[in-house]
Length: 257
Image (cartoon, rainbow, N blue to C red; front, top):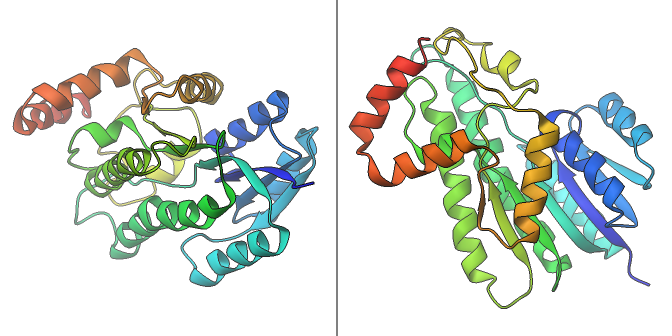
């Protein structure tokens, strides 16, 4: 009998870890495959799960590590019930204060790795399988002093919506998750740059628990986009009707508060 697997990237902490916990309680798979760079953190998550966990230690910006995941999938031939692409990071600062290396790494992890993991997983998905791509409310607007991060999440949103169209009729349900600030380790990493305090406060930050719960409900309801908060929904509407020059001016005020 084909093994049912939920595959989660960025599963060692934050939103990815919370997806592992909630999918575990939902009993959607025979195994939960948790993927991140740090094995000790993944082992901690694995011990929190009742569902058997398979640990995949991988840097998703590394081609060899992606190839290793593809090889594991080929060897085990699972049926993937859920793919959660939650790996990603951001930096605060402008083009001068964010390093070239950090800018390139954001693009590689937030964009390229999402595409590579999705393409690796899709051959093992069929009717009833589900994909949730973790984007951000930052995808709705250009954000100075978070320019690369916001652009990378806009890529995830557009890619996810187009993929959803391509998969129409397949029975595979695809949703882009676009929350506002979430109480995870994101802020600590984001502030590790020369412009780390260009964004003063993360106003009205949500919990990973509520964000993941809303994402799973939205995906179950076949929504293309899960905003997961009134603030995110407002930003989505602003992005549709307000000229970018005005929304960016508003962001310039908000980030200084």
